Length: 156
Image (cartoon, rainbow, N blue to C red; front, side, top):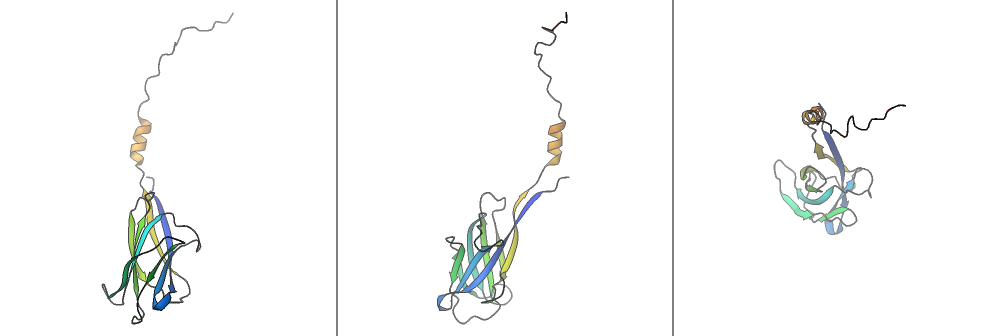
């Protein structure tokens, strides 16, 4: 059996301070800050407060803007505490076999060292080895008679 081809992509999520207590959320390549994310077609974000389940919706949904990298400014106000949750809806390009993913993670603390990371499957290709074997073992068609026996060279 041939294992499937699976492509996994990673994304870093960074939180930066925005104007007036807003939070700037950036989606970055796992490779480096300016690396492109060609598989990412769309992204939106919602911020929820701490607690089980939904928690209080504090901001969003907001579409992330692709210009100069994926980012969104989320107005949270000053009354939020620690334990914020970020929900992302990511839409993948048509080159991917998966259409997208919903992901939730703890919103990194402001000024936190390091970024949060997401890892997910964007492409999976299954190989039907039985069909390939059947096709390869099918009998070949009879060869065409291209003048067999006619015009043989004779040796003097």
